[in-house]
Length: 203
Image (cartoon, rainbow, N blue to C red; front, side):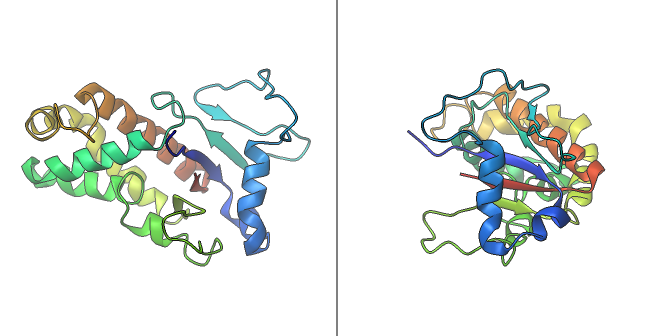
C-alpha cells in the first residue's frame, strides 16, 4: 500500500492558536474522530469533495476529498513529475503561471512547503514527514490567480503531455487524468483562497 494524502482547508489563525505540538493531532481528530474500535460512519456525507466536521462550533476546517485519486498520494506525485517533464515544451505564457500554481501543491518546491517550517513540529525522519504540504493563506491568492490564467489554456498542454508523458512509468495514465487532478487542485485552491484559509496535507 502506498501513502495517502488527506487535504484540509484550514483557518490558519484558529489552528495557529493551538500549541505547535498539538496541531497535527487536532487535524487528525477532525478527519478521523472515531477510535480504532469504532466503525467509519458512512452517514457522514461528502458533497463536492468536501467533508465538514460535525459539531456545534462554527466550522474552521474542512477536508477535501479528491474524487480522482481515491485518497492516494501517488497521483499527485505523478502529476508533478508530468509537469516537470513537459514544462520545457510549454510556452512561457502558460509555463510561468503553471509553475506558480503547482509549486508546493504537486511539486515539492515553492512557498507552500516552506510555509510548514515552524508552523508544525519538524519530522525526526525526513523520509517520514508529518506534513506533506503546508500552504499558508498568504500564498493562496497568488496561486488562485495563476490558476485563473492557466485553466482556459489547459488544452495547450495536450501535445507536450503526449511527447513527454504518455507510456512513461511514474506519469499519469492519460492527459485527461492529469487535467482532472489539476482542476481539482484549482477548485480547492480557489475555495480556500476565497475564505482566507490555508491548505494542509497530511500523509
